[in-house]
Image 1 (cartoon, helix red, strand yellow):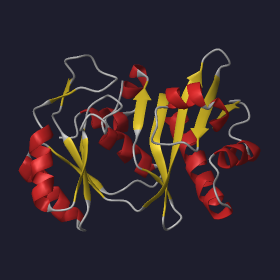
Image 2 (cartoon, one colour; image 1 turned 180 degrees about the vertical axis):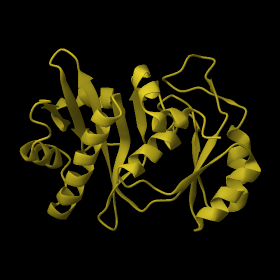
Image 3 (tube, helix red, strand yellow; image 1 turned 180 degrees about the horizontal axis):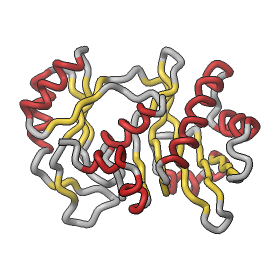
Length: 236
């Protein structure tokens, strides 16, 4: 089962992985109220659908005023969003996520999948975040670092270093990334995930590592075994 971005970010936050502050809205009025509660002067309005490529399809908008928050939310809610990962009909937008703007320095890519042949969890990272990983793999495969983790050993320090080098992080950022990588691996195992994707994972002007986007796919049986995850299916 795919979780929405706002649901995934709630789990990230529970594991100490930094995400921007945000709130879900189902009406333009709720979107404005969310932006007011978050404060600041820059917000991101994000359509909540199970598909990548939202930004190019108009499903992610940067708002500099509350009027823009209202207008962008009104323009998304109740509409069908068509992206390269949907069919021609698209997916309905029933919720939007209002998020505080971030001070983006660099955009990175990180995902985790189950390597079923090797029976290992694999991290896939690239310094070329914000792009389709398929495009990076086709044009510049050397920009992708893959790390397979033996379950009997767990995530090793040298593997974290390999990923950090692949992401071209500075030494202070490497320390921050190590905490994120350990937390993600623990989360992946705990919730019985089959896939996690963060595109982009960003470094900020303050030197932080932040999950600007979040996608989690959880095995169906795990939802029934873990009440905390099951509740995310119906947050009301």
